[in-house]
Length: 143
Image (cartoon, rainbow, N blue to C red; front, side, top):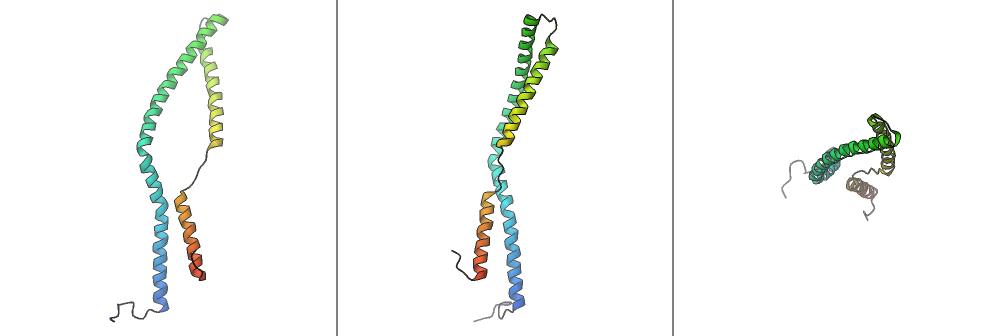
């Protein structure tokens, strides 16, 4: 049987060097996994994000028109009920206060419902690898 260069009679130094190189390569690949997973998620949702952006632009235009309408309706009500000649400033102030309160309440509720999570596949993979490595290093079966 011909001897393979570097593999004929490996000593401890050679074996430890190989183990260290394999561990470094493994750690490098484990660090790449979350980046790849997040990139997959971003690529999968990019087209949806573009459509959401367009929808947000139309939604903003709708909200501007709604604010103008609300101010005009409050102004008409103030003119009829209070007899003010130019009630638009008061109508704008009332609308601004109502929208500020609405934004504050809905923002607070949204913040309380916010749920952030990490890349679960990567976390599970790292946990599984740690269990496997412990089992191998301690001489037990991996199951």
